[in-house]
Image (tube, rainbow, N blue to C red; front, side):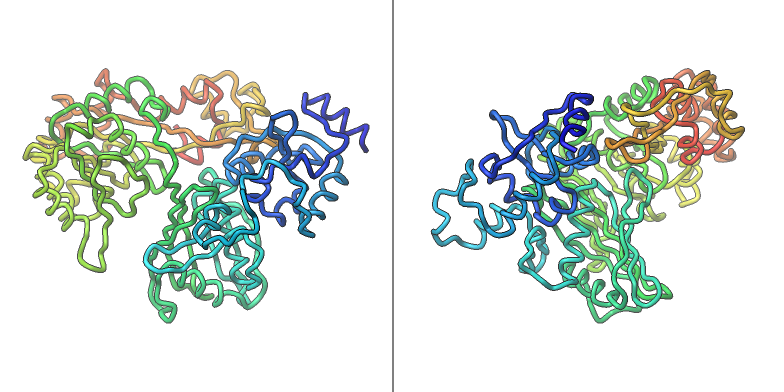
Length: 530
């Protein structure tokens, strides 16, 4: 076994350690890594000649590098060793044999410590924003099965960089747990029978919801702090036939905002969108289905603006990113703070730029449009399939075509598609594809396309996502067409397609297919046939 592992390490140019000692463990990192998870995956952080490694007994452990880095807030490199070495040291840690571990920052382990310092050292807590509720995610001291079940789910979702956690009731009180990863849902596990009521009640307590109300939908918020990284969790429950269904949206507060030119926009769309953002007034719409990255795009747009010289205010539900020097308002419908009500009050705050998280109703649309006509630059989102449809949606809400024509500066529509793994994807001749995929490749004029394969570093052959964009500029011809108020979305598309600054979504998709960034099947799933 040792010989085969050593050969494998040589083949993949990885360090190999024939022996491990407990003295090689960095205490600061070990304290942040849950023992149960390390045992399950047979991994262990070690230090050797000043470099930090994640020792593993097989190449499968490479897929855990990113998760381990998140937990320990440190960059670890993969290394191979015998399973016996890892198991032996983990057993010592389980028995409390940590006296010989060096590299600890604890000056006096016997001194009394307050609870806050202990939380900071362990760097992993669950805390409600409205109550004193707190729970250590990585601690094994709480033996309540429900508490451990929920904590483990949240922690694993954060490790996997999931955007949502779905808790779905089935027969006999069994709860099906699914994670949304890169826009796709994956099964994670099933609970034991008859745990539904306890799981839902626990989550409701964490998020300040009414545990006695099971007939109506509810919304709540909570927070987790993992490895000194704060993640807000938006909780939603709805009653279904088998009980209550719960969805937790994970919002990483510490996630850095991407510059506009890093979102993957084609040059035409980037230039058109940037020019619209430089206008002193008007309204800019970003459209797309739920989960298409609209909020990320708008935040990136705000990042291009001078927040020191300009008064920038937002009203959102929820606040997904905290931005310095920008006033951000959380919608609270229960107390009457809706988008429309908040927008009215924002206008009394002398704003230069206003971001409306979503235009959901006629009242919000009317106020947003009139705000843009009175010297403010307004950014907002809509749920439409393409850019021309955003115009139809606003007019359906009651916005007069002549007003919309006067204030609209541009519409950006977008989708998200998964990117093929750069380590394992293959390039194949487009003629060998199934008929429905071959049609896409021919329309994109792609002779070769990427095919996802799968490896330890990726998820079914994909890593991350990229945007597919479409930008509709408000040229004189487009303004005249909107002003007439008599055109359909398809007719408006025909007019705007003759504009040199028009960027169609299918053209951007075709370019990304030719560049082997994504696959035909992903494009079909995202935007359909060309």
